[in-house]
Length: 87
Image (tube, rainbow, N blue to C red; front, top):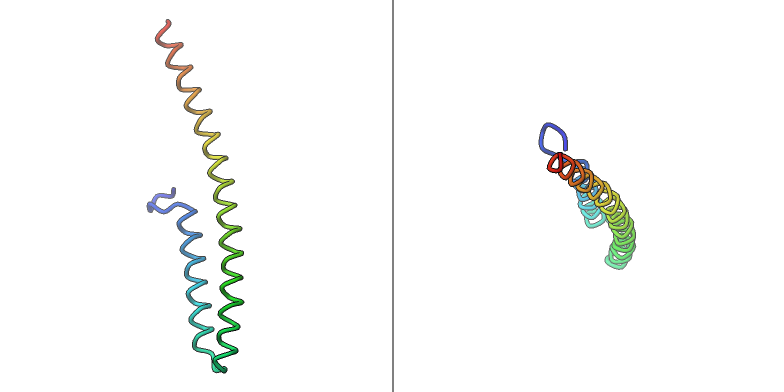
């Protein structure tokens, strides 16, 4: 988290959401037939689904990494506490 209260994950999520919304609006406002618009929306939805799946997998990997780091920190804290208590 930086000094403004934003973390990297929320910034990336905001950027992705803005891109998705912008692309969706561009598809809907482009001059074309209804069939073409529906086909583009279908393709766009599939692309979004793939990207979101990849983002979720990346987030899971990051979460697992952070959990292991946090577990190690907690264990180190417990050991330090036990050493101080046993002195």
